[in-house]
Image (cartoon, rainbow, N blue to C red; front, side, top):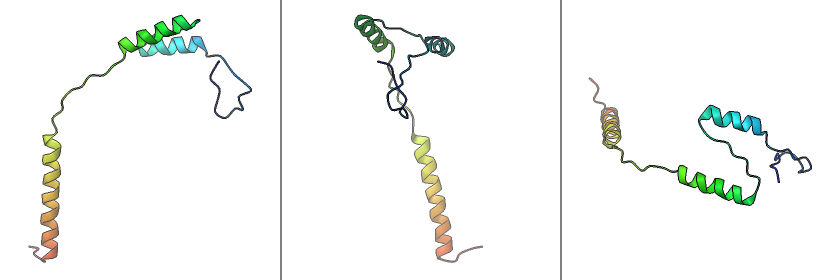
Length: 88
């Protein structure tokens, strides 16, 4: 079964353009696969699962909190000057 456009009624189906997919994979540093059987499709998904992942890393956020506090303190000081009419 080939993917169909959401705008179509489902009557027209088109196979994937393997040449374009291969070119896209080469251009982006990826790989292109063509599964002709259930077994080859399972192998491809199994191979993908071992290569796709993520890495957790700790990130320092003290600077963001300090900058936010500085902005809030400055705003509070400015509002205090306005409230009590204490301009120089």
